[in-house]
Length: 316
Image (tube, helix red, strand yellow):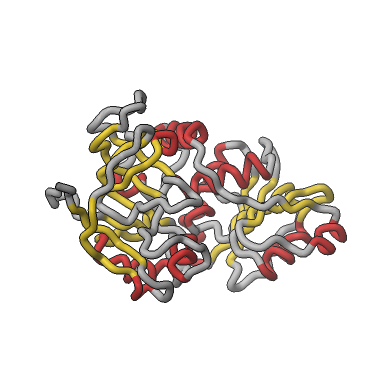
């Protein structure tokens, strides 16, 4: 007889109210998978995009890709993990990850050992934003020690991790955010803070930058080209600036499409355990309050990450 679990599912596309908390059959791990007892599921803007119908996932589907938890069962071909291990990762992205649930069957290749320095709820907020930041800065942006980098939305999920990675790498970090984030970002490693609500960042930057990490897009991304040096790089997370503007400024755009990468996530884990990167969780919601969590997610005001927490005391 199949066992049951609680999960959030989307049966129709729409606003946060379409998220349903319900009982469904617990998955079984395939040969190359782990069954993870989810202790935390991180929220990302892509979760809301999927809920609104921007991706063609078969309905009903379980949102979420970021998770942290303990291994409940191990597929027959998996040799690197045992039941009881604490793991975290980016599950199956961009296919359905099923993280908003008490249990998730996850490819073993997509997870690594959880940082010892973090509890599960904090760890759950790390994988997607940290991998995105890493790939934007280093894989696409080719950031070098001594480079100057402008990070937009520096207090957000990707931004606050990118600030720390860039600072640890020896770059000069310029960050834009609302004024109340000044102390927060200075503590994380921003060398020059720009309050975007009161200052045009172009006027505040007196020396060209080598790289722009743009988590905003649109006009902000286009205006950013004026502060890039000739041959500089912009790594947009959303829409890229028009090709003619890139040509006019003699700069390059390299789109960031995050991918699961266990090797890089292990490097990030080491930085977290060494204290070089400290993830910030803005708020933790019970899994039953996924609707409220998505409403906050779409307000775009959270500092750091939002995380859902299943009822880990429930015996299923």
